[in-house]
Amino acid sequence: MNGFDFNKQAANVVVWLLLLAMPFWLPAIGGYIELGSRVVVLGLAAISLNFLLGYTGVLSFGHAAYFGLGAYGVGMIIRYVTPSTGLGILVGTLVGGIAAAIIGPLIIRLRGVYFAMVTIAFGQVFYFIAFRWNSVTGGDDGLIGWTRQPLNLGFTTVDILHNPTAFYYLVLVLFAISLGVMAWILGSPFGRTLIAIRENERRARFLGIPVDSHIWISWVISCTFVSLAGTLYALLNNFVDPRALYWTQSGDFVIMAVLGGMRSFWGPLIGAAIYVVLQDYLSSQTENWQSFIGLFFVLIVLFFPRGVLGFIRRKVAS
Amino acid sequence: MTQVVLFNVFNGLIVGAFYALMALGLSLILNLSGVINFAHGGFLAIGGYLAYVLIPYIGFWGALIVAPFLTALLGLVVERLLIRRVYGRDPLYSLLLTFGLAFIFEDGTRFIWGAQSLPFQVPGWLMSPLSNDFFFLTGYRLFMVAIVAIAVAALFVILGRTRLGMRIRAGTLDLETVSVLGVNVRILRNLNFGLGVYLAGLAGVLAVGQLGLQPTIGSSLIMPSFVAIIVGGLGSLPGTLLGGLLIGVASGVTTVFFPSATEAVIYVMMALVLLIRPRGLLGEEGRF
Image 1 (cartoon, rainbow over the protein chains, first blue to last red):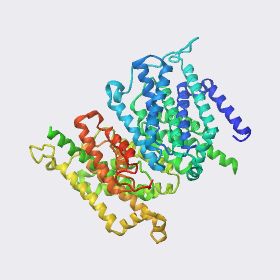
Image 2: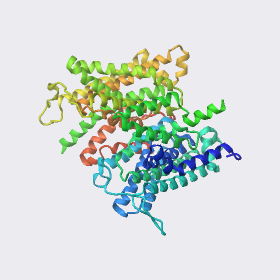
Image 3: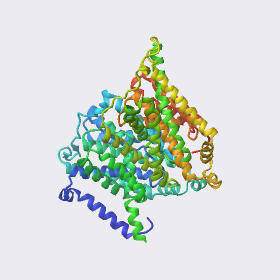
Image 4: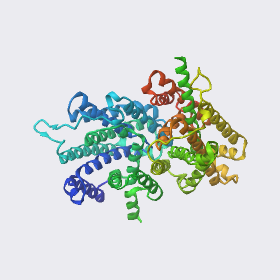
């Protein structure tokens, strides 16, 4: 952010061009558009998590809870209240954000592994509510009987249900807005303060920065955008089940962020792309894909802890 | 009604005893090495499956003794080959590493023994009720509580009275000084990990007799164990024990009055503890 960095701008342009043109090149290399949508949705989740993990330095392992809250929020609005995709996204995102704001004060004073442990355990509350409250959430079978609704823009209606490309662009627009907002926050004095907290919390405290409230705000921002990703995930599948809230899902987000590179803004998107494609491939090849995903976790930790972008950066630097 | 309540309190106590056993192992590892072992539930499941395999050859009693030891042995190997590499690094990596191991263990047991629940035989004479009025007081349940009590007592004796236990306790406070005093810290951490995994294996053998043997048994028990540690207080083993029993009984009692909140209630308890006493019931101030 200090001056004009040509490489960085070039990378931004390339990434956006690739994302914009995805419906054209992805089918050509053997993918399908829903796969692209999944990458962008989970990429948004991983980038939102990284706002907290990589930029504030707080180890959250419970983001699946807010992802799932967003997913159930949009599904329940469309199923029970009014068939409006836009309202569903708005409500789902708000529900996740508000839940995070309420839980925040209980956890912001905790650090390190303790924070991870408490956040992941808290997520289980929502899992069991979704699992047990059969009559409303559909329990273990998931919330069915609803689909995403055509998007009414006032002057025209976009059929995002039957046209996956149109839905992809809806996802991409929301993705772009979210990233814009997060990048703007990170570039603001507030965002610089978050990075200062990451680098040296004690010094930040001595400088008179209210560390706890900064972490609380960062936590709420991060969880709100993860909820938004959750709403899009539910819309993508026209379905939501309690597994979207289960603690193993939180680990998936963390590994995406680490795999791509936690110290870079685009890293988690790359991590999400690799993870989604790998999972898609493995689950079509073997029933025991979970073991391979587990092995993948182990290998990344042992041999690739800085992620793809961190690795490239090091190679370039040396 | 009294009977129903008593039944569920007792049931909760048993489940709480599993939570406590598992959480004590987790706590041991966390306190000395700073690693949260997500794979702990996987070790528990392996303990149960090993017992299932061993019972036809050496009987229930043999399996009860041998299976946890084999599980602990596996734990020593895993620590030696993998966990050791992430000590001292960002805690993020130990979390991800054990997370991956948890996936591998759960899927591995499913691959070998199948996803369906397997029958698990405990000796018949243990299964008969001791009294007609208290039908739920079967021998097996009392037996489980007794075994857990013995195991916990033994753990505290090991920690309090033996050289190894003394070193583990000292290492928890200041590992560097212990190392400077000539203790081989690598071996200490290895043995400590094995001890923690032993408790998980033992909990596994006992739990499958009560909860049934399926690959997901580990991942369903690990989150309550986290809650037990948080409620009891990080860094305090008696606290962990208390936390495990408390949340077990709480969810047992909740089963009577509000069955659909059986699982959720323990997280509400955790929220209350964090609100009123963030360090946990018996936790030390300022440890985390």
